[in-house]
Length: 502
Ligand code: GAP
Image (cartoon, rainbow, N blue to C red; front, side, top):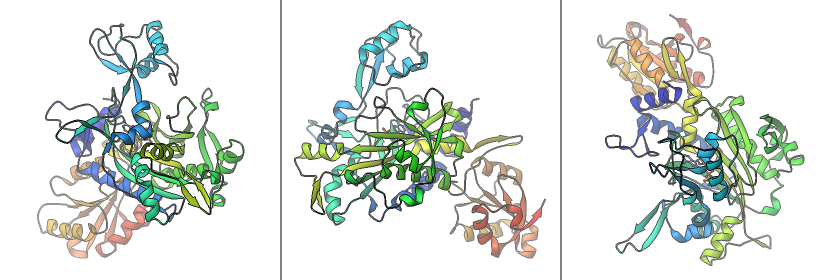
């Protein structure tokens, strides 16, 4: 079994996620989060929300609908530009992405290629259909990835499922700018669903047709893009950049923010947010440094609306290398100018006597991809157990409480402790197996600390506390459990927190 299959098996068996509507023939690219996956996803979203909305007092979250007016996407450019190259096998009629088909067979980048150039490459390299092996394809055509729907009884009005959450803050900009007393920078975040009719969502849980994005749109004055109030706090902080110029050597450049600004000519406001994103991955999500990089995108690779674009990539064994989980996009005034033109409503603002259309810096994260990445990076196989080494801030269950036996009033005492801890920690109670089996089950879902109630508990009000990673156990007084757990989750070694027991 591959690592991907092992993770997907555990995810489905234990309630992280599984293909949606599995009792029927599931449709690729749609997944259900089970109870553990939902807890973990909420943890990730809460961390993101607290961290990024905390960057400025004028950053807020809004919530919007998923179905939007066609005019939104005429103005945003998605109707015209949001497309992938599609090719169909003449024999089995399998449809796939032409660029992926070529890149899987030939070691070249297809970025910026026209339909005809892709047709020629497919013919020249005698590329075969991944489904039936035939090598005759129709012409490459562009395929718009938005899902359309009909609204109302006449069925005449076409609407679209939003392909990015970003459009919600853009169309809400005018209202929120007034409500927030006409100040910029102003940040509007959305954590919500986005929908893309991916041609071949073949990367399991990574390329989905319905997924969650966490995006923050920062509206600011582009004349101030090289200014940053917090610059001194980050200027000596080193970023891990994979620049376009490094592609041949595959080297990651470690460069101070100040140098990124002076030598690479990246504006301070942009660099500051690179630093904050990197710190989110290192300090909050505890991603190992060597697994992280920012990948610079060239002009041909960037989305149609972006002027500066670095993707956040994590090195994932299940996907054979660095893969995109988020991006930092300088979108210029593309969005507000587009909506001003399309809606005929003025989107200009006047600040200190200056009239202008705000520009947008976008922090865009795929929540599901981040969840998959954390599962990939935390998955460990040891001699007698399989486990996820999740950090306590992300674990769906932080603490598990078990009675050693299902008799002698041990379950009653264990439930008392469970009720005590569940107010403060994500806690579960289990009594359905031998203690060894219960440990293995909890380790397999990444639970950080396991508490066992035994006969000694009834005598002296102490329990054993077991560390998932080292499997070491200590004896702790029930009245101290909460403070000991807090220190333990704060990275204190278990042996420093109590008397070791076998
Ligand atoms: N608003 C900008 C935007 O949507 P994007 O690079 O197309 O930019 C942002 O998407 C993030 O959304 C990506 O970095 C990725 O994490 C996630 N994402 C995009 N397409 C996805 C898909 N088909 N399945 C899962 N996540 C996806």
